[in-house]
Image (cartoon, rainbow, N blue to C red; front, side, top):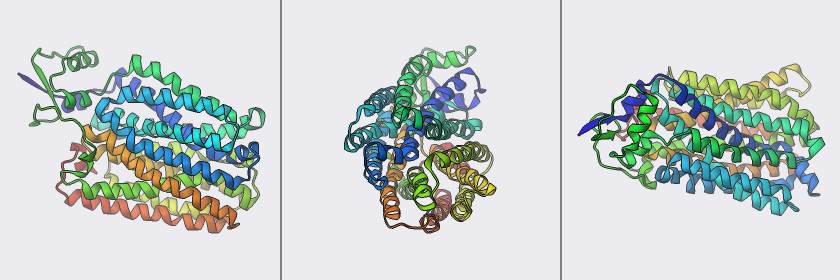
Length: 452
């Protein structure tokens, strides 16, 4: 019986065609996720107007969409650890795309809210499953950079949804965003089926004697010889017994405290993201008199910072300790919140501050996502990403209440954003605590955890 270490095989691979294909397809899934996640916030006043409702009426839709996202993160993402990343990605794309297209026919804001809630269940699973796939395909020396590149797709989707608000809204109405958001995930299904094989690490933990693993390895490395009696393991000294993922895995074997700290950080970080993605255009329109189309143009430029922030955090995390780099991003975000609230929209420096804001916010969240892939073993990676995202969606449920309250109470822009600035400051403290927990704990973690 010949033991073949899948971890070593993946880490020894040179980046090639196989890795780039997986990156492109999973990056497209992330693009779709980013587009649909943020598009509602950018066109919220137009949707409300289209249904004859005031802007604050959108708070109910935002809340229920976040509830759908939380349900999906907790319920659908873990299924990828049982049935495979590729299979669940295809299913999620199919259902999410179909429901989003059906949203075009909504006749009331209540109908649209119901459809967005259902779509959110499947949209929430796309990002964690795509990141789990990329993290298990890519060699360790480029893993953080590849995850960062896939998250550039997420940021690009965010930016593209701003393009809808800036250029398509007046011509084709709010429905144009839903046509784009519905068709794109359906196009991903054949790409996943024909070009992306299932994760080797997932297959090895499910069945160490799976002969199809050897066939996939030979496609990646034609010179490789795989004996007929090969048994595939993850790491030297690991057993050959199949290990099925359980939902409780992220809390067992000494991982409870680490998981709780990660959840708290994700909850606060995604509260911040949900608040600004859903309410920032409305805040500027209602509190500063800036039309959403005019704000969308500046925001579109600002989102270029998201791409830069995501790429930089990936580069840094391949070279430095994540728990030292990520807090710097959130400390900077605290200052950027204050900057965009006090500097005049007409001032030239405002766009610079908006770029910095997106650079720090998106880079920080990308760092948290990448950190999760580095500390949890493969068999529970999709569950860990999904449940951390689910914890974050809880914050997303709370954020719309604050946004609606701030608008209804006629807060000033400085007060609304000044109060929100405390959230990233708390995230920075939590990540510093997380570094200590990982360093002093005795949990069974992924091999990369020693470098975070």
